[in-house]
Length: 110
Image (cartoon, rainbow, N blue to C red; front, side):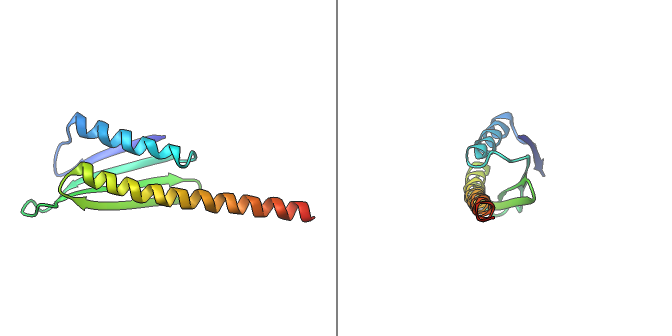
C-alpha cells in the first residue's frame, strides 16, 4: 500500500513520519485490499493544548474511509484515528464477506 504523509503548518521529524507510516501500514492486517492512504498532520491553534490533528484517508475498492482526531500529541491523535479506521475496515470486510456468501447461496439455488 502506498502511503502519503503531509505535515501542515510545521515540519515533521523522521521519527514522527516513521511512527505514522508503521501504524498505517499495520491496517493491512485487517483488510488486505487497501489501495493507498493519505495522512495529514496539522498543527492547529497554538494556544490550545490539544492542537495536533491527524487526518487519515484510506482508498479501498469502491470506497474511501476517513478518520480525524485531535489530541495533545500527533502520536495519540494518530493512534485514535487508526483505531477508528480499524473498526471501519473490519466492518467493511464483514460486509464484503456477507455479500460474497449471499452470492454463493444464490448461485447454489440456481
